Image (cartoon, rainbow over all chains, first blue to last red):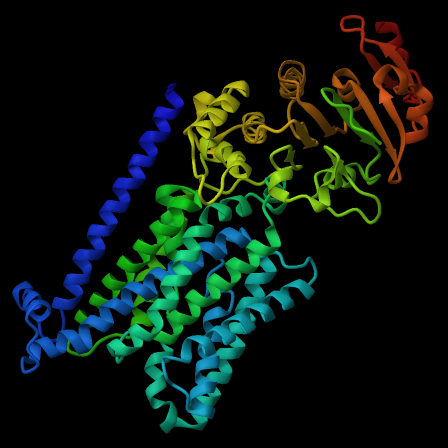
Length: 339
Length: 247
């Protein structure tokens, strides 16, 4: 074979190494996440909790009831939001596209607040679907507003419409909150994005849908690259672009909705992680999707560890911590790119 | 209208006359309001789009390259119509991609980022992408726009070579009349959405037809070197005295 195939093999080897490294990072951070906390635990105690669970051992209870669900939620929410953002940026060819900026997070959160405040629904069996309804309605509204604006649904108009819809929905949620402080007290923390306070049942109820959506994203990933090359090119290569866009839209809504149902609206992951991923491994979405998923999981696990340690024994809300840590990274990336 | 196989057909016409629309309709990117496109005896609109993509490739005007894509990754996308869930990347795919990159002289750039290439190199990569698709028909929408004259000529020679050596059928839209007349086997002349003339270059590339299509007075001459027709527009300028002296 000639030199060009050799070069490609090298670059795909680099990707495999990066993926292996990320797998290790997720495992290490997962264990660290379980061990670190208001009460630090050793690796032996962790292993004992899994191999020989003792219901009278307080440490084991902490691990199973509090830390394990929280770590699993960090992994699934981090991966889901990163993949949702990566898909959106590819499809809309808009580097600013993400579940938070195009209004999906606000829509999902709004729907959950309404369902809980007015109908008293908070079972994890229903919240993903309620969140999905909210996220897709908000996305359609954003698309509709951008489409009606002069110039059509350009990246610019979509971003502006997304910001407007998000701000509007957030304002209504605040009005609900202020008018009914007792009922919304529990929701306050959730609304700023929080991994705490969930039990393992929530994970078991919601995670299957996330895994399904994640599989869909991986199966569709090669087609996202085609779509990112423009509709005409994609059609010329024999892709049914409308059907693919609907499939991807449903995938993004499901990933976002499940994340919000688990942890509230956690921003920045969907925006920053796909950028960092493409920075390292390029624009082939067969690589971007799995890479973003692992990097998103790492990021949220790491951020959540920091959020619990910095002002221990109190803790910073995860949604706030992702922004505090994510924003400087984003600014750095922009500067690095300009340089 | 019939596209003659194994030839280069070039669509010309004034701005907004429907050149690109015609090309996109042939490429099934746009649906015809009436009539249909027949490919190998089948209505293209009723054939599976992926099947069509195995016979007919399209290079749209000013294609966008996603940031961070390498040359080889871009060219590899041309294999999509030949792949399926069960049939992922194969040896045939690898060979088609390497061959396409060699024909377009971008094999040495395989691992380079498209963003870092010049306009001409970039366009050669896109042509390699369409070649990797291995289709009998290749449609190109203004492949030479915004390129230097030398790059335009190189590109056109590359495309015509494909027709002659690999027996492909090319249909393209071009703006430059002389470039079209120099490299086409057949011309398709459009005005206001209608095909007015369609035939071999030496039959249709004449002063009356160009006057009719573009409302422009021209002189048709033969290039002394290639014997291809050239058109020189009447400029209607006052003759500049010192220029006459210089001649």
